[in-house]
Amino acid sequence: MIWRRLLGVALLVTAVASAAQKTDDLECMFLGYPDLEYDGFDRTEVLTEKNFNKTVFAEDAKSVVFFNDVEEDDPELDQYECFMQLSAQIMTKRGFNFFTVNTTKEQRLRKQEEVEKGEDTIHVYKDGFKIEYNGVRDPETFVGWMMDIPDDPVTIINDEHDLEEFEDLDDEVVRIIGYFEPGSAALKEFEEAAEDFMGEIEFFAVVTSKWARKVGLKRIGEVQMLRPFEEDPLFAPTSADTEEEFEDWVEKHKEPVMQKLTLENYFNVWRDPEEDERMILAFVDEETREGRAMKKLLDKIADENSEHAGTLEIVLIDPDEFPLMVDVWEDMFGIDIEEGPQIGLVDISEKEGIWFDISQVNLDDPKKHSDSNFEVLQTWIDQIMSGSISLDDDDDDEPEPSPPPPPAKGKKNKKEL
Image (cartoon, rainbow, N blue to C red; front, side, top):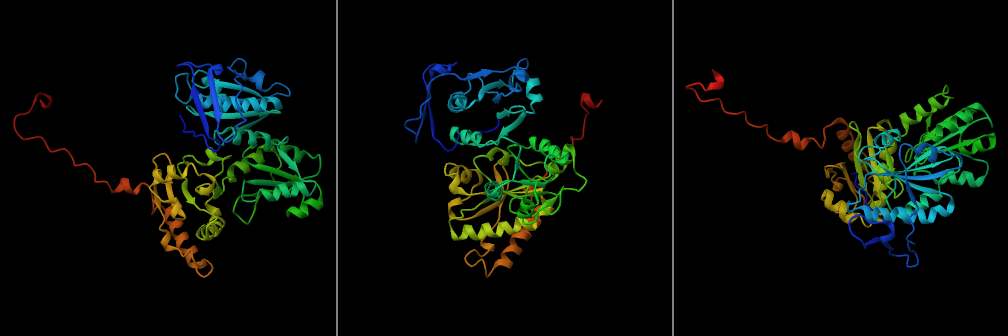
């Protein structure tokens, strides 16, 4: 089962009954909110292959579906139930219905909804859109995320508030913005393409020359992708004007070189990279002088290495935003995060990493040493991308096993006759 950890609101569970507990027998206490209590009502229903489509895709339905393989004797069941039931208690009042799917029993349904075997995940179905939740299993984070789900897959920028929303997402998420004629077929295709990326990428559009100028778009049909920590946008081909063409272009270029780990994107970022990807973790506390200097250096590294997007993934982590995880990460990788910035090439599953020697850069006077700092860190990145620095090096250094000794000369045994 994919590792999930409750973060944020501390959650205590008291098991009152034994083995197969019912929700009525579940007591949940949420520390930090003394007036917040679970009322004991079960607000979830079980979905199967037979009733799934007609339930979640019904007109005006707003459905939250928990895909899981948590069994009744699983020690995680109580925590899972508390998270799910408190979220349902709050959001059913806002028109959402909550369901569960046992992925062990519903194999075909699991494959239909593209849920990996053994994976626990949450999908929100709304207005025909499917949005996957990739955040931590914390009721506060999840409910806050749900309340921020946009009504439409594309935000049309028509006023300063919309523009501010667009600008505030700089370096937070991948953004795509296009300039279209109002009501045009191309805008419709753009909106349909955006549906497949809801919850992952933010789509915006402008339909007047005034707002096009404000966001830097010059011609009707122009579409730009803005990836976090990269100065220059990517331009969609001028020929792209259908849903499929937009989707293909977005899918090909959506991976930024560097992105920040947040409570909302945790499990979309904290995962094993693809076979041809290199993952670098950068623990940087921006409240310290050294942290600010390292962050500025990493910004330049990300921008200068945009050609490695899709094969190089730098995960920027502010330890102050994950205080419960600092000790876990320090034990996992054998580093001291509180001592100062830490940057390493890692394998999350194997819990191992090769860590950059921070003493090679001067973070006390970063302006004076800007060029040399960049050169040293870029050289390290180049060695990773060329394979000179690799997590497989340790395996390569292991001596090959000695060949078995030749059989003693003399009388042959029966197998040799």
